[in-house]
Length: 155
Image 1 (cartoon, rainbow, N blue to C red):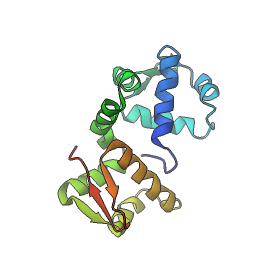
Image 2: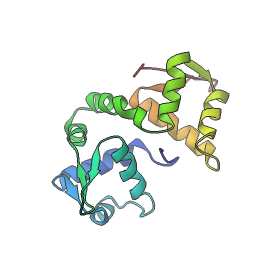
Image 3: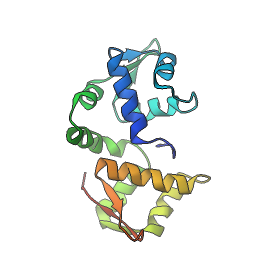
């Protein structure tokens, strides 16, 4: 599941740091390099692993996958396309994309209802952050009046 506070920048920062370290690193070294809060880094690694960008080696190192390497060396258009193709691996993006692929548009109340299945205490933060992910990946976005969320791509 996508934590309510984890942004695309967290994910891209992780793969870029791994790339700069030769494609693998001990998580503690990554934390130092990224200056990331010790509570956040494991979640960033989990999401990156769910998206297929990193793998965990038997010795505990975080290793950049072929897809992760393509993300870090690609242009932003290709990066978004590759991430978009893997978004269904992570909730609540998967559920939102399923609903939107059937309906194309949902109300902001319906959007909130989907997210409330995953986020209880931090629903307002999650609403903003998941919209940030949807817009960054070119999957979905909210209209200018904050009344509807609509599908941008069918994948």
